[in-house]
View 1 (tube, rainbow, N blue to C red):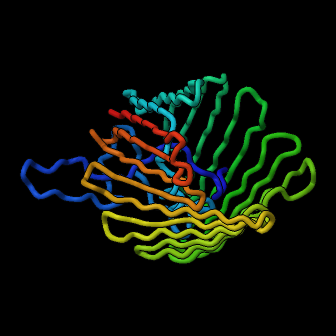
View 2: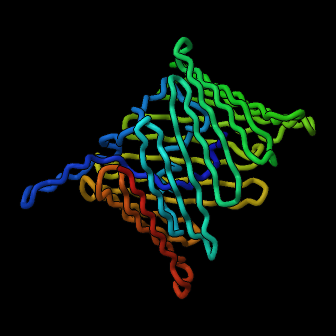
View 3: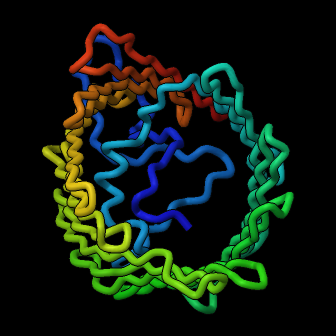
Length: 321
């Protein structure tokens, strides 16, 4: 299960309507997080009740700061079978290596099966089961091949006032991970702990609190066994623009890390983002939805404190029918 410190690597977009304005008509700017038409096979997204899971604390600001800033050429193609199965092929060029992955997703009744195979001959099978008789409960089983790392069983439960998750490794001396959040959609407090039965000790304990308003999401988290204090904020200026940032302090190294970012929708199909951190790294991107669910993203990054160094440029193409 991903923790709040994880940085998502997969490119994502700000959903926007796909209808273009006629020529000579006043342009209409797309609101941030506006809904778009779903592609065939896509299940409608259900809003999580209550405070959600612990991994969602601070996620809004992390997505603003990190999502879509991909500096490696990446190509993603998704197609759908007649039975509703989604097949996605992804290829990324990193340095001189080309990393590829094929993913198949299929849903039958209340069970969703996800199979991933990559160019390193690794296969990951994930089965997610929902229980209609127990609203908010979900069981996730993850099995890797070959068995170099143990599989995992995870049970999640969410209601209007809590979000709980229990994960247990599938081996003789498993790693046990538990996270819980209590509160509501406005205020949430939670913690995340991991206990390794092989060494008989806690390997992780984190805590966080989140405040959510209509146009503001703020959070404070204590991570890395209390060594790292981080604060994040996401503020929606208007329907087209948002700003935010993260501030992290390490008690052991006494180092600070700060990042600010902004996002703006130029039109219903085009979004720009920019970010800057205290180490002088400047990043920017432009993302265009040239057809529904299909995205072209161009990213760049350079060191403002060493402008003589070459800048990085990334290209990401996502194709969906």
